[in-house]
Amino acid sequence: MIKSNQANPREQHITIVSETFPPEINGVANTLKHLCQGLIQKGHRVTVVRPRQRGERKNIAPTTNEALFSREYIVTGLPLPGYADLRFGVTTSGELRRLWQTNRPDTIYVATQGPLGIAAASAARKMGIPVSSGFHTNFHQYSRYYGVGVLEKLLCSYGRWFHNRTAITLVPTKKMQQVTAKMGITSTGVWSRGVDCNHFAPHKRDESLRASWGLDDNSPAVLYAGRLAAEKNLKMAVACYERIHKLHPRAKFVLVGDGPMRKQLAEKHPDYIFCGTQRGNDLARHYASCDLFLFPSKTDTFGNVVLEAMASGLAVIAYDDAAAREHIRNEENGIKAPLTMDEKFVSGALRLINQPTLLNRIREQARQDALKLSWNSQIEQFEQLVLNQSPKARYYANNKQSISLL
Image 1: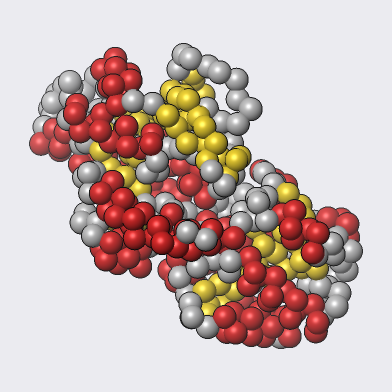
Image 2: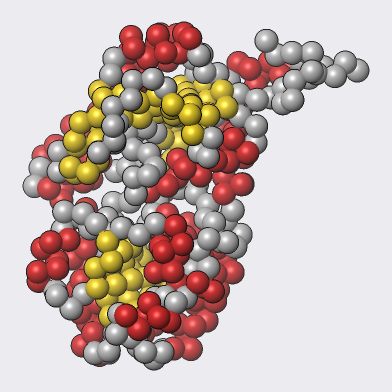
């Protein structure tokens, strides 16, 4: 048998195209961070194409950052209407074709469906490069929360057009696979999410941090972590906490994150604890130092924060949707409420606060279940759905004894 002289004959060059990327803080950026790290650990080369982020200096030439990816290419970034701290990318299909003619990817994954994603998909199709896409955000549903619900059908049609131009669309849950099928998106595959249980862990509970919030050992901390924006259904989180506070006056509401609703909420509820954006170990400490986690969103495609809360040993209250639908077993490792029954959401939270034994049992089980949700298994699933469909992967599968793939 002739041995290959390559270190990794199955190494592929994947380009990830996204309007958002670390150090930005959101679910898509977090997912892509783990995806890039996981692919590189498995020996693949990764290039990222993204917009210039807010406050970032202009940089014409591609740069290198071995911590997250092999190379990155930065295009012009403009503020996203209503989300000034996020950007969308502006470039042309021709510019990307010139880039990829010099350094041709084996496959391209388009994570967002903005102008940059359109240009990338068009360039890939013209060059005959396999292109897949990700359904990370329910943009068509967001319109309901910003007074432009009439645009929902138009945005749905746009999403169908965009994703059907790619070979496969990755969705995070089985339910989202059903949702996208109803939208008319024809080829989908389930690619879920993992959680780093070494980073998010109960032992990072910080009593000095709790004391700074005005809590003692017997006072519950109710946590919301995520974007402070209308589409996250924060009104329900507030209504739920206020019911808790009436019965438990020593409880505190801790909000981690930032967004357009922060100023309004802070003015109306000066007793709430607004911690702003937290990163790294500070974020893990904030999770672990709380007791109950409210996830009131009805628009998230997944919700990475649910797994982070479970890994941190918190009891999650959520609707029977997205990550909660996949990973929470009602009254075993969390509480789920039907999407149309807001009172069930509130009553579930009150039940946990009023029954410490049940609360502690659910918190322990949540941690145990989170330990099974590794990112490594999700990276392997991504390889199966996306990388194994490229010409290079098919060539290797049919020619395992070849000296070289090229």
